[in-house]
Length: 235
Image 1 (cartoon, helix red, strand yellow):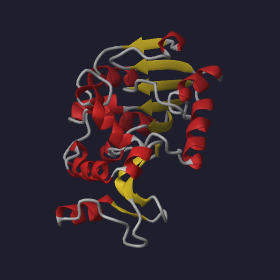
Image 2 (image 1 turned 90 degrees about the horizontal axis):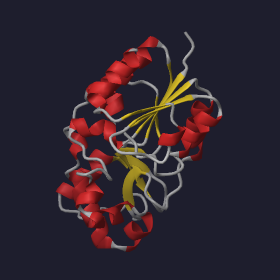
Image 3 (image 1 turned 180 degrees about the horizontal axis):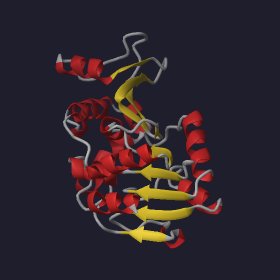
Image 4 (image 1 turned 90 degrees about the vertical axis):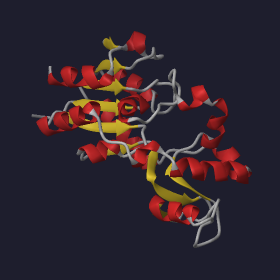
């Protein structure tokens, strides 16, 4: 069986695992609008206090203790049928991989890595957090002394071109495109839905809130992902 389904997931698929989304009623930015500053590269570079807050937030991130939920496992089951063309995620929490998904395209990077914004050195988040716990509030790069940040894409930061190209190819080359738990407001990730539809794919949106692409979709589902997605993919 040839793979024909490309899936894009956003924060909404992880809320059942205890990881809050960003823009929903109980989202991180809904509860604390100022928190969005930590996700903007220019602010992060300019403000040492903001970086210190960011490191404390990383220490306390729910991803470290979260477990994959029924939505993640449903996508593993889909992959095992041979119908999955690609699983593209905007999430940085690693829950797809922990559930057992093999071919995940992490469009916005991963919380499990750290990058130096000066020399591009890559290290493990666990090592950086150990330094924070030992008293370094804003640990510098051990290679060049530069500013460290999680290996995730912030506002104002370019996506990895090779990763984006893989995602775009998967959107163009599928019979069905499922957008799951994403507000479809952040570009270029959101544009993958339109790209897939433009190339003839059936567009299915599973999200609690309306999205800008609902009118383009062949099917819109507002039911909770943990219940609706397993049934949808089994059909």
